[in-house]
Image 1 (tube, one colour):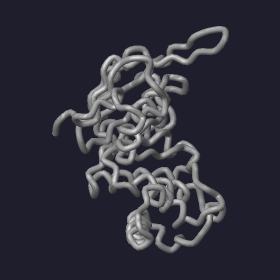
Image 2 (cartoon, helix red, strand yellow):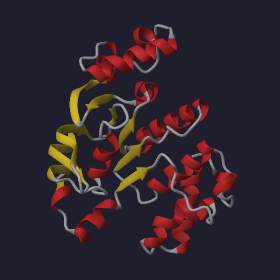
Image 3 (cartoon, rainbow, N blue to C red):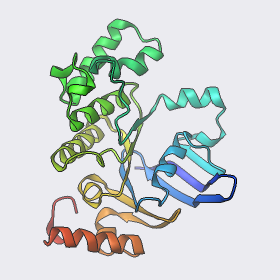
Image 4 (spheres, one colour):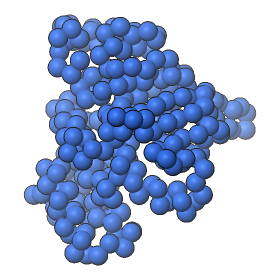
Length: 262
């Protein structure tokens, strides 16, 4: 494996009339191709801002972001639009069109690209099978469970065959059973398609289950990076230590010394 996504000296601030709030304070990060990489931290740590800077839904103040040999931060609008076709994104609140069927929701990005109806049909059917929703092709989002809606969101994110999948708190709005099924699906997609996944989460169990490596974000600064096992067995950051204590409080077991995924 080689470093595929590189972030160098990334800063991002938000300004209003009264003050400037610096959310990211010099982020340096390397992610290997084909990895499932977790970025964990409490609410307000800057996780979502960081992941949205990767595809420039948020414009960094300064710093560089590379995906492969491409410097994302140097692309003009036309170049960025083209590169974004290969960067899928999964949102916490699904972002589906309620007036469209499952099929049309997944087909939407392909339709924008001018893909033929026949090719769209073939692609969407294949994606529906991948996410286990072939029987929901003509259903509307209002009739789906949260987990099923997220599966539609994942299928739509995969429609353009991305090489990077950004997951922004994709399981936070789901019940525990749905959360596990979505995590298992993401792991399957990673193995089946080789997509590099960056998973933003404040749920330790989610990171523990499928991430190979993790970065801990604390007040806009990465305080530690390492294997999931190392960070959650012996956290060095305040956030990591608090996460582990809370996790142990809920679990009351020895899953970190012998549990699945660590």
